Image (cartoon, rainbow, N blue to C red):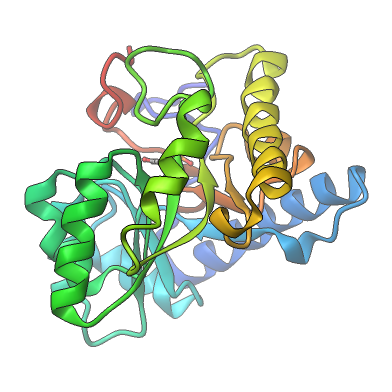
Amino acid sequence: MTGANGLSDEFPRAETVDDFVRNVASVRARIAAAAHRVGRDPAEVRLLPVSKTVPEDRLRLAVEAGLHLLGENRVQEATRKYHAMKDLDVEWSIIGNLQTNKARDVAAYAAEFQALDRLRVAEVLNRRLEAAGRTLPVFVQVNTSNEPQKYGIQPDELPEFLAALGQYPTLKVQGLMTLAIFSSDAQRVRECFIVLRTLRDRMRYEAPELIGPGELSMGMSGDFEIAVEEGSTVVRVGQAIFGARSTPDSHYWPGMA
Ligand SMILES: *Cc1c(COP(=O)(O)O)cnc(C)c1O
């Protein structure tokens, strides 16, 4: 559904602390219901609120409502918010593609990086982290939808990629991350999540030392319930918490309509 402002009515905009508390509770209830449908414990699923495009004044309300780790797709935006909100108890998770010239910022302050898909980035990040005396939890992004324009390594590249990450001791592999295909066909979306889980399970069997805790970061506002049913341990949810975004997704994912 589209409202008068051209934005989806499906995602009510949070403007007050109470709105945030309500939206988060509603997302958590849906996570719990999805987990229970498949006999999982909802406590296995971490909710990562994604705050891209949301301005600082509303983020302050979100922090007041109890959100203390926020996901940002773009490093530049994350860095600006990090500096502006240093007075608050809030940390930043970088979930989007990283250019090597921004690795220094990520190494300096990020709490985690979820979109690692190039060894060149791993190398530069490792160097910056060593200089900063820090380590960084990372997720390897996998392209599970077979769409050429999507970020992420190909599934068959994963074992070699994880083995190569062993050269970079500051990067602490947590598991895998993916974006499902953008499709209204729930079965096609589900298949992407199954690909990621199967890959994780195979790595656990073949080389468990390379996959760390084996987390699965998958699921966004439009598909997190399916992701939880398929084993997600981190859902990255923006619009269902903050409200509909006016920025088209093509801004973040090349090739999208
Ligand atoms: C924006 C974004 C999300 C969240 O998308 P919503 O539709 O707002 O839930 C998840 N993952 C990544 C990588 C994103 O950039």
